[in-house]
Length: 203
Figure (cartoon, rainbow, N blue to C red):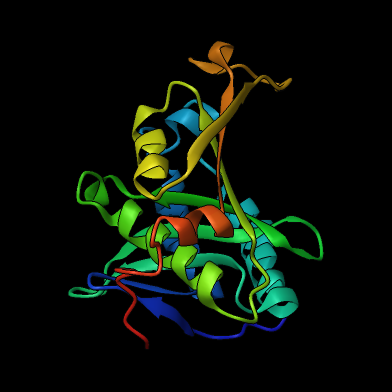
């Protein structure tokens, strides 16, 4: 599959969100290799390099080809260029742009600094203000016990929708409490004056 190259999607005061390339394998393997980063995802189990290179990165590149402005975005610190992790903003239903899932996974070095909220707010702002995006609803999911991630969702304006349970092939600590869904519609966002203070700096 063709590699679209390093292309900046958007910038904020402290972050650059750009397209992934095949050269990002080391960063992704390192990110998923931290047991604390993966605690609420796999119970701490790392992602295999082979899977990252043969499945994950090709998935990212395919989304750029199909959707252009919706997908997974590598996050870098503007000041240093350091790879911090990624943000997800992609359709929940194949080929339908009206509802997108918001996600984020950052290295521990970026925790507690407001990066997740900053990047997520910028993506929501872009999704709801770009006339061509077609985004009308943003959803996000995490484990019920993942208080840090739930707080980011709340800071971004998403509200609690439901708690649900899924059948997983392997239970991890905390999964017995289920998953939670949060959501925000374009109408709700506009009613809260969400158009102000996006923090986006055009590349």
